[in-house]
Image (cartoon, rainbow, N blue to C red; front, side, top):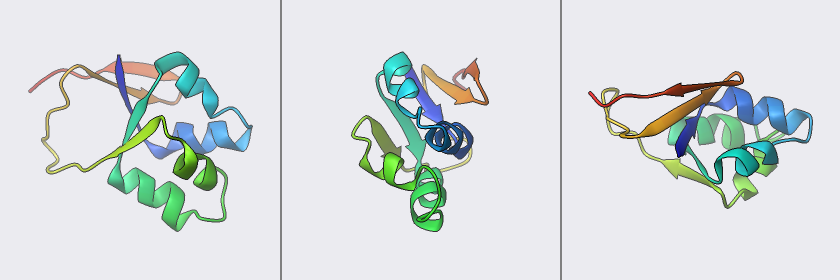
Length: 87
């Protein structure tokens, strides 16, 4: 299963020292470039910055448009798993 995440679970899990839960459950996750910038660059001194930057199992993806299709991806947000459909 492929998973894409926003900043909320990354920051929240990092804050309690449990970011690795995402790796254990999903193996790898993807984050949009904007999420990486928010957590790692803008939030450089905040929880999650170092953890996300150093996590080899988190890949940063460039989103080309708001309507870009992410086939067979799942979105993890606030403890919920939401399947994304094509189109």
